[in-house]
Length: 268
Image 1 (cartoon, rainbow, N blue to C red):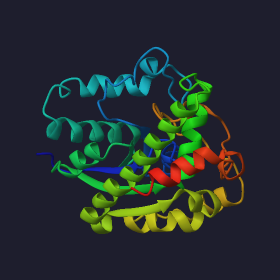
Image 2: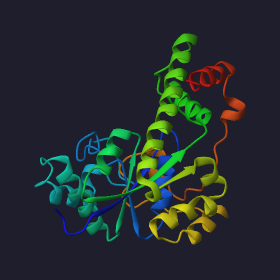
Image 3: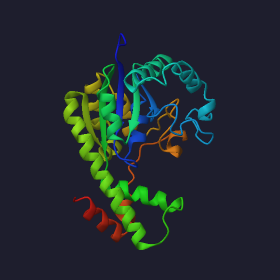
Image 4: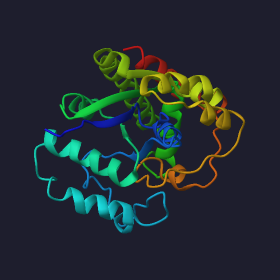
C-alpha cells in the first residue's frame, strides 16, 4: 500500500458528450493535470504513430509521456489495484500537480478506480442533451464514411447511440450515489453558457477555487490547451486559443427521423 492515495478526478459521461472540453477546462487549474483517457495505459492506441499529444509532438515521442512510460514500466504487468495508483502518482509527480484528471466513457473502469484502495476518486459526471450527443456522433459517422445514405442503417445507429447515452447516465448516476460528496453532476449546456456557476460545485468538492477560470471562460476569452493531453477530441485537444462555445446545431439541423428515433430509443 502506498503512503498517500493518488488523487484522481474522473470526468465521465458519453462519447460526444463534452468530456474532452470539461477535462481541458479543469486542467486550467494549476492543481489539476488533464491527461485524456488513461485506461489501458500504455496500450489502447495511445502511442500509435498517428496519435498526437496536445504539446504538438507525436504521443510516442513526447518527452513527458516517455518519462511516464519509463517510470511505469516496472509496474505495468502488476494487478490493476497495484499499477493504477502507481500510474497516477507518476503523472502527479512529473506534472507537479496533486490531482490527475482522467476521462472515461466506461462505467466499469470508473468502478474499478472506486474499488482501488490507493486511489482517492472524485467523479465529475458530464451530462449533455442526448440529441446533441446523437447528432454529433451521426455527423462524424457520415464524415468518416461509416454511414451511407441508407435510411434503416442510419436509424439503427441513432437508436444505438441514444440507448448508450441513456445507459451512461444511469450507470454513472449509480456511481454518484456511491461516492456521495465526492461526486458532482455538471450539465454540459451550463458549463458552456455559465461556466462560473457550473464550476463552483466542482471547486467545493475538490477544495479548489475555479472562480477566476469561470469568469475568464464566461467572458469569451480563449484558454490554453492542456500541456499533455493524449486522448479525446483530436481537433479540440490540439487547437490553440480555444473559446468556450455552446454547440446547439442539433436544434435546427437534426433531421426529423433522427429526432423521432432518439425520443423512442431514450424512453427505454
